[in-house]
Image 1 (cartoon, helix red, strand yellow):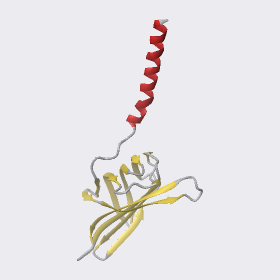
Image 2: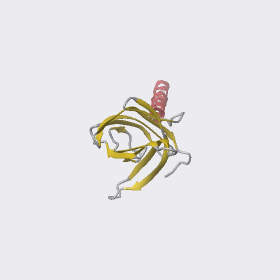
Image 3: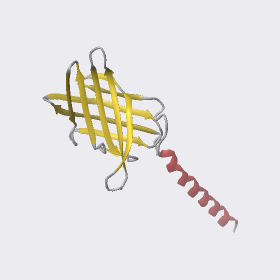
Image 4: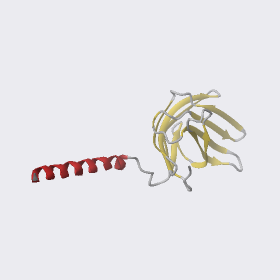
Length: 162
């Protein structure tokens, strides 16, 4: 009878310990802010310029929009603005639904989207407190080949939302 009680206690203990281990496997928020990428071989540092949540048309969930910016506006504008759209709270490979690229240099500008399949991405964390993803891809925009490599976004929101 004593062996039966000991076996039962050990079995229950193992069950409790293993059920808690999945919480520890969840990705954590980035420890440091880093938003950067190589654009045609040149490293650019970005910052979050805006974000938002929109209710999907079919009420099935929300779409997260992140806007990132790099550059200067005066005396002559030399900037990059990128907008990403993806399902809020979803993580995984190639889930970014829209990747809009906008470039202004002096008085010229061009804008376009990276076509799905030409952008590879991995969203690691996507919650109300933080976002973390890597990406790369290529696109032809207004006759210019744009190659993005080593793209990374590690961002902690200043105010959690939901």
